Length: 437
Image 1 (spheres, rainbow, N blue to C red):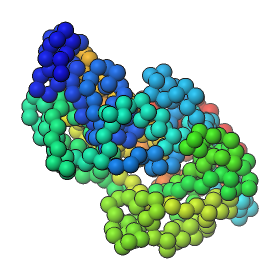
Image 2: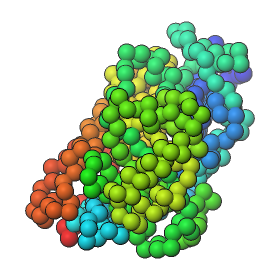
Image 3: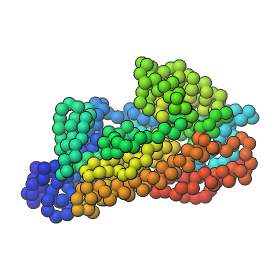
Image 4: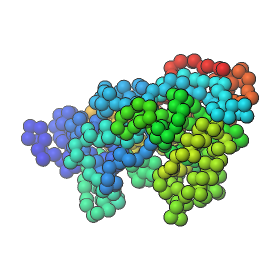
């Protein structure tokens, strides 16, 4: 393929010549989920020859329930034409800390609230919006990577079907169980945090009382560590009309490392690796957790869980990395540093990784130098996100104040010392507003 002014591409798509041409290259993206699509769009618009390799043979639109991010992140995505200007999201401006009590069994008590800037979206709807901006011929389904070899001036990819592809840059967007992370940093072991998240969704038409759905509560439990959150997302078609929306919930539950087989064995008797996807949980385990939450949560939310089907389990891990890339291989999104999901930082990580990489490639003389500089920046930001996640984990899982008994002064002091790490991203509003009831 000829480059500008008739110049010929190098072996792996690297163009000689002036700085603008030099940085155009063949880029391979491993994984076609949210981070993979963002990177493909932005790298393609920067003039690179981009191909996405997604192992799933069908679309990903049915995966995931809801996710949260901030208005600032969604606004940036709109300004970059990554999503439509009218992309549907459900805004939430208050985080309510609550707990069931004997005197308030239906919704519990709410002694403490904090201002937040959270937007709740449907995972499948977001992926649809992104993937429609990736040229269909550049998004290749059913392609599973078997090996990647650094050749110095490029990377050779070998797929399970025997196909071989060469690229000047490989960006691994392959999630928590990233092959890229294992290739680049085999010495890094993920750290199990001592708890799991049991999550599910329910159409809001199955709930008679819609008034509590306007809130974003975080419930501490009556007798165990952990917490529960719930929020409403638009339907996958984009409707935010009551009766057409989806309730998304997540119960964070402690689980000893020695007991994980109990949670990870699926309905076929297979032990899963960290996640039991929707439709694969054993019915008896699902019922066991529903019974547990019926004792720990207010009746309103226990009823939502009782009606939910197709629930899933995910162990909570974190991992800190020495970098985000080496040579011509780099990590993006959840393939990089893994932080606690309660930070709501997944969309932010994917967006900032991709935008910063495009900028680095445009401002450095060669790909390895660009990746090195980019990696330093991503690692710094990710470590701050992990520090925030550690604080949120301590506050909301292990050392939550007893909201049913604490005084106003104690609640205020607990909140002020709980979340102190500033960072490039947080869904906490830029205000000190804390409401004590």
